[in-house]
Amino acid sequence: MLRITPQRCLVRPFSISRCLKQAQPEVKENSTDEQKFLPMSRAQTAYLDRVIRVDQAGELGANYIYAGQYFVLANKYPHLKPVLQHMWDQEIHHHNTFNNLQLKKRVRPSLLTPLWKIGAFAMGAGTSLISPQAAMACTEAVETVIGRHYNDQLRCLTNQYELQKPDGSHGQSEEVQSLTKTITQFRDEELEHLNTAVEHDSHQAVPYKLLTEGIMTICRAAVWTAERV
Ligand SMILES: [Fe+2]
Ligand SMILES: [Fe+2]
Image (cartoon, rainbow, N blue to C red; front, side, top):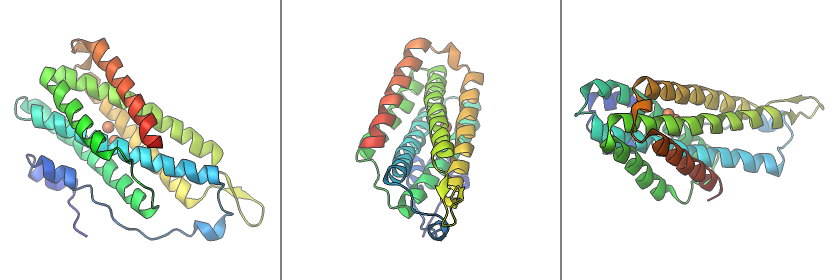
């Protein structure tokens, strides 16, 4: 299956649609967890599906937010170009990863996917049109919500997924360990993006408070909705 890597975006930075389309799923092999552990409860299975659905939608949104920022700011502010490109590349990787997991686990995507795409691009481009600082305030707000969201998921995966083995002992399945590792890495990268936004004057945005509080409220509502719809 054709798969375009983030590096190819670096070569052709102006191809916004190419970068957005590159998040193509790949099918991977099944794990052997089924033989090692007793089946998960319905609640555990449902929560894992919800994690994959909401994280795929969130990373899709992040991909489109950075696309909007790059579209407006990259040529006008050349010093921001590599900064935006680096964060965007990481979001493309996050988006690809959850696309793959969604296909592998056969989790249905959020029914509001078209809305997330339009809303996220509009948020990235709209705040960038106000000022580069406003774009960074948008990044700060989004990454604050996503960092907390990933921490909540990590807490649940750590505390609620000690599965029983046929011999009566307990342990974590490879599937859960792998998901935990992925979310931990992505959480750390989101927090790097947050720090980058602050270093690039997000606090100088006008109106800072209104922008960040408004965007955090929108993001929390989007997370709540994408988990369910
Ligand atoms: Fe991300
Ligand atoms: Fe991010």
